[in-house]
Amino acid sequence: MRGCLEVRAGGPAVGVDSMLSGVWYWLVIGAFAMHGVGMIGAAGYLPFDKKGGFIGTSWLLGSGGLATAIGVIVWAAAGIAYVAAAYGLWRDLDWWQSLALAGAIATLLAIALWFGKVPGGVYVGGALAVATIVLVVLV
Image (cartoon, rainbow, N blue to C red):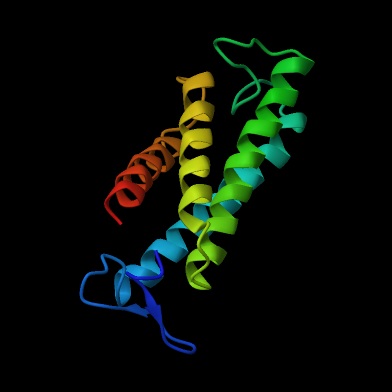
């Protein structure tokens, strides 16, 4: 990845062959960071969702303690991976793509396990996950 991105001190990635130059660089970092924080927030909310309205009840796992524990792990893992990927991309670290891919897969897993139970806005995160996979493949 270092061949595609050249990071100037305090500035965005530059390079003719880079898909992540200029404004796109900062938009991707921002999207990763915001999505990650949202996923971590959902993980933090899950144990307190006694009504099963948001992600307290999985169509596959039910609504017991095991479902809650798995939910916290999956949603938090996705969030942590995305926040770390944002940091890694910002600092031009070699592993940002691996964590972005892991975050995308965990996001899609979370949506699949709670499909139909999450608010419509969560599916925007699913679109970001698919876009992340495409980005990682192309960059």
